[in-house]
Image 1 (tube, rainbow over the protein chains, first blue to last red):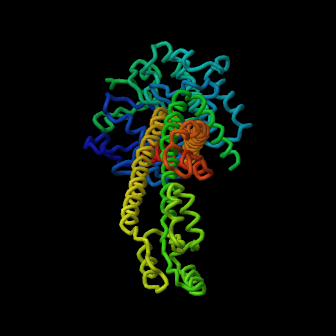
Image 2 (cartoon, chains in turn purple, red):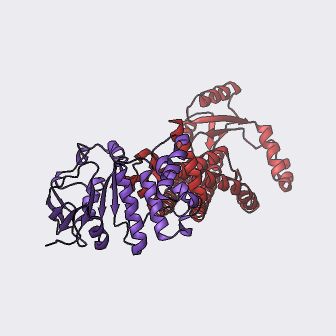
Length: 225
Length: 289
């Protein structure tokens, strides 16, 4: 991100001149209080919103300058999970994961193996035929992670993935994200969870009032020393 | 491409089935609205054909002089037939007129029989393409020396034409208003069905589905709702019109209530059309944000 400023139509300025480079294969925590601009960073990356000023480059391309029909192609390089999982309640775990491939036109014979692989990574193979309502919160989030992984993204974005989960389950989710990172996928995780951030000792980017106030490798949630 | 169409049709059908309540609500609304619309159309078609038959009744009747030679009458008939306003020219001879009178008024046979000779004049009865041309044809006949008198029903014809025009215009206005209301209600119901699945659309967008992959399943689903609604409507129309026909036939309606191929096509077309357009527009608002 180069000198990115984002103001919303209601006059609120969410980001002010943000510069941020995330190398491929990195694991980055995006921290900061509510309203600091974490969600806006994510929305700009998936081009749900457009930057008011500056450029957002993904894989060398300015996502703000993409044509409408190119936007889906960029999104297929990204996997994303949210605090509220966003699973379809009428579909089984397997169908929820397969849905992500069906809607981008993947041939049917390629879908089943990819779904099985994603479910294996998150450890949900035995729950594949259950509905989301029959699962625990952690299992639901793992389903969402499988869906975000199934099309082999290069960037994995997690927006408060542990916000609705208890500490033990949260820890499992983080372990899963670290494994995904080890597979070569860049991971960007926005979070409030200080305990986890401090324990993992990865790069931490702290936002406050739309500005980056700290960018530190191997850091804790709070500024140290 | 084939995979895309197959996907769209399959997920349209799944969407229709899995969102049972919404699908039923949308289809039921579609049926009610289409019954309303097509019922009105059938009534108006009946009214129109009644009006047409009334218009066809308008005849210019010209009584001929007894002295008129047969050759003149024939040439008058020919020149009348050549007039663009005229559809048909009938000739009623003196004898025929006499017989008609006797059959129509049997109680007055004695009176007419007491007369020395047949008092009934021969006449020409001219059917018009359009009752508005009455004046033209009547004045043309008046100027002919062999015509004794043209039956003057001009005022009656004028009044009738006014009433018919008001009825026709009123029918069209009512049809337009009801049509707009129906369109609005159906599109709104489909919109609700799409809004209830905003999550699904959002997920599709996030995992990188192209606009076409998001849009077409919903459009096909709208078509399913429309087709189903139209078929049910058509199925209902036959018994409904069958039940109502005895009541309507009391009125001087020439053609009864009939579900013609036109109505079937209009119901099918508007059902599927509104379903498709409604879905397209509803999904559209989610895609262009």
